[in-house]
Image (tube, rainbow, N blue to C red; front, side):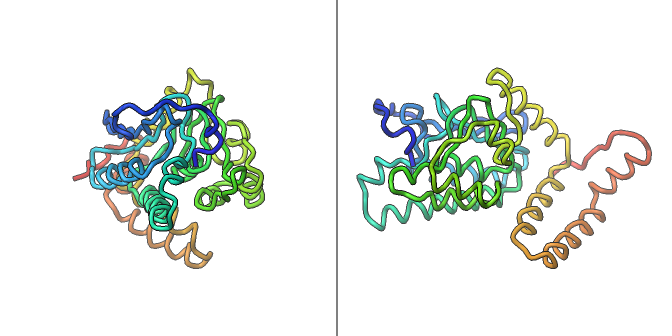
Length: 273
């Protein structure tokens, strides 16, 4: 929902791609690119996100994905103008069905996804931040699930939000629609790090470098196990973890990593493919 920012007068979008992708040194950056509408998430943008994420999933050259926003905001949420112009069950239902598939694709992606948050992230924009594996934010970032202010309970944003922060804090955000600042978001667990605006890309680069220095296959299997065990009961979580770490320990990466530790040298990780 492009809710918290919807009262602002918005100029028509230029004929530009709604999503930009750039690749450099193992990092695929996906930039939400509707700056004049605060990166309102349209059906076209959701479809573009799904297409790019599917392509990235099978690309061994990509080690990390960054989701960012162009212009003054990260994202104001779903495009309410588009939904009000197509206010029928078929279209609105299709929007949220595709949105859910994008979020599930993000979680299933082998590569870690980092949100780069420089401005407001509201409703579905906040959902994307919560759905990323990691988030680095500027002190100027702020977060809200403010659909309730416009008669809409942010049901789909509530799914990843309630899996990031405590139940009562998530419900407070959902039922009051109030903003929290970046420092509060960090304290609550919605983002990992908060830095001054001029430090944002430098801090993001530090996180990326730390991930890329690790073996890709282990990161991928670790991410898959991490989310699987979160939704399991305790017994099933330990069963999945035991199976995962056994396979990991018997794999080439662990053999090299442990040998390097014993021999007091840097590991030379096996290259994918």
